[in-house]
Image (tube, rainbow, N blue to C red; front, side, top):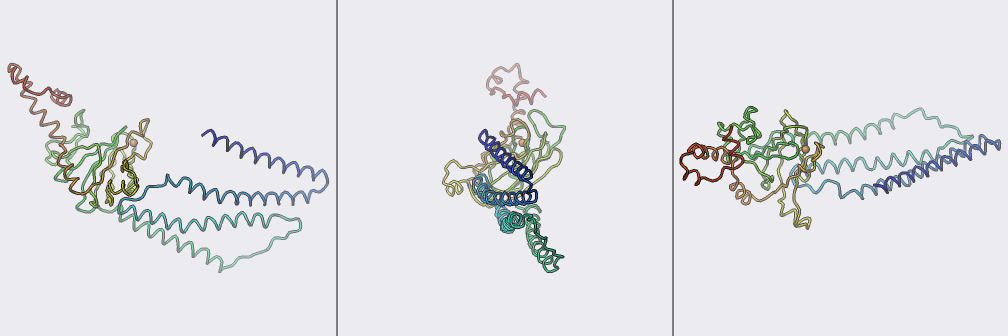
Length: 358
Ligand SMILES: [Cu+2]
């Protein structure tokens, strides 16, 4: 950081010195009586400086792109991720040559045609042919880029495939809570009135669809199976970001959003591909949401269907965890005179204690 600041200060100082020298030499030649030739010298100096900016600036811009390339998006691991990367590639193919051509023209012409004492401006009234060429070519390229963008947008943001697995992601300071729709693949209804310390989202236990919904710390996904993520926020803005899957959607309090995608690489495959046994896909929050924003990171596991089913079967629904244990606890705590039964019962957990006190 400090070296960067120092570098910037040095550049500014050098520019300041060049400017002062130019001013001084101009003043000297005015004193000598050659005002016209001093202007010409000044113009030439500016032309040379323009050229220097190009000679240093263009390679520097290429170098910085190469230097920071390790912070570019990682290799895509979803169906639509490949489309997005393709669009990015073709947009770059169209823009990078234009960037170089226009900048070379800008700086070289400034140098070549810097003001001369007896120089005369060339009068060019315009050319329809030229106008047509430099309007039609960019317009054609723009139409192609916009067309590919819009068609991909509708494919990505359109209705999710019918067989999509449904997962709900709720952002709050500072964690993502993941709720799976369970075996029925239906998220149970929520009601604001039911929100409590043990029922953070106010799941309505009378709704049968809620009874198999479970929460998970890790986002497990199936290889090549579409998944629909339903995104919410409890407090402030968050953003559901899966960089490897090119998924990014804001989580807005009060406005449900969603995103569907299909993972195409398992975690194991990626580990092999990247030669990194510790690699994990990650879920991050891409909206600076507060002090512990960094803490919202979650691991994403993509696996074959068999491994997923095994994990899925081992999960316990929130209903089972909270409501049924609470029901079991009620007679035990009510039967105060039956000491043997009370001692046989397991000690109530923190959650069930709170629930039975409600
Ligand atoms: Cu956040």
